[in-house]
Length: 580
Image 1 (cartoon, rainbow, N blue to C red):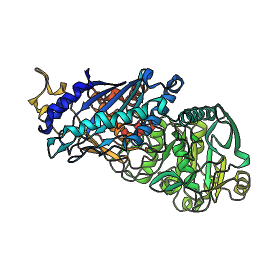
Image 2 (tube, rainbow, N blue to C red; image 1 turned 180 degrees about the horizontal axis):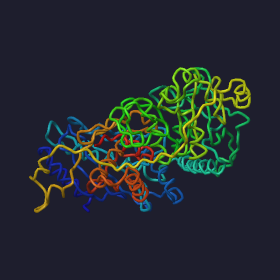
Image 3 (cartoon, one colour; image 1 turned 60 degrees about the horizontal axis):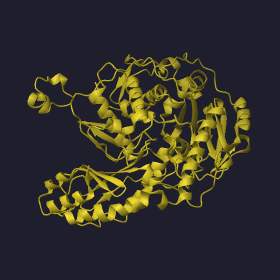
Image 4 (cartoon, one colour; image 1 turned 45 degrees about the vertical axis):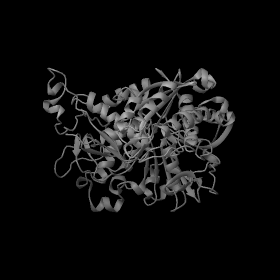
């Protein structure tokens, strides 16, 4: 480790040299009460910015040990500090001048949800903040005095204000930690009371706009129906009331624009903790809940969809179904089976984004097209068995078919964003409008055996024999894959695109980047044609719990820019990776 004075000398020694001379700065430097690490230096001022990290000890920062005593508080503290650091950095980014990305100081931007991020990692030893800096240049000539301003004027101010307890709003930080512990308590209560979700009275469910996740101002606050209202006693907030959704089949109905999809959206994002003031901070859903929809054209490999689809006219085997271009019904059937494999205990569906022929067949259609000529067993006929035989609950938004009323345990009508429990009155009507009895194929739990193979990559100069250790054969060498993230919607790995547009509980581009990292690691180290998807994902899940995302770094450091995805999203990503 070198001193900050030595870094200053190095900066002055490379001034006016060509840009690659900046690479001599790579290393670790001791500053006052923190360590600065220059992990990666960009190739030119127009390239992706340099990777920088700062390490601080708990002794120096002074945060109470109770704020980093377990994974929950560590994640919450890291999220809070990252937001503080982002605010400070915004005052200084691009103050240093130059060409291209010169002067950029970039920190991960957090949304309304609390995620574990590499941008600010809280460990037992201290705090690690990772961020990006555009090293200044004029053209491609180093302008090191501007970088000296960043390292010795701007950054120390940001670090002092963001990462030292004495400079924090103690009450605001305490509220964030206490809220996280209350949210964890609600999740425990869901399991203890056999509930799948909780929505607090007074919650603000509508969002500002279709492109903003902030709460809508002057919206109707949530008020639970008396029949579903429960009271929870939380460790910090105390008593709180709200709607508890029981396990089983819950139907959400109502007229258009009355709040059905808004409630479902709040529930699907209730798998994450939300920040104070979000309006949805006390909307908590079973953390394994999975939003399902049809995905025309998606890839499916070796999935047992025979629970829903059998006897195809082309005689295709549905116990090990593969297609490069799925229909809406086959994609939704595969999504359910993959969700079962991922361990989901709750399925969330919206009739608007589901394949109609997969969800229900009305009595007239059943008379016109007899069952022997229809290969699809609709979800309507399987939802009850999914709950009673597999313990998987369903929350379904319906607006056009009344058939779902007959299988529902709980029926909620949204009326001008206010929920009404209409279960009893609707069940009386169901008796007047019975569904014709039909013979449903016997239920069996899907059993997919899916060894995972990887897509062959075009031969590189390295793999053709121009590199590698002496005596190393081509089979011994690990093919190095490049990844590129396309926002939240997907990424490329090698020559292949992985489309995640319809994985709706994936909420942050940094989660997508992490999925790309995980698939890259699996492709290079785990996928061998013998291990199944389940075995690979369980191994990755264990490593994530033990070491976090740093385990999957392909070098000596891991950058900021990654956020932890759920196991459900890892399965969804791997299932959409097109392979032989």
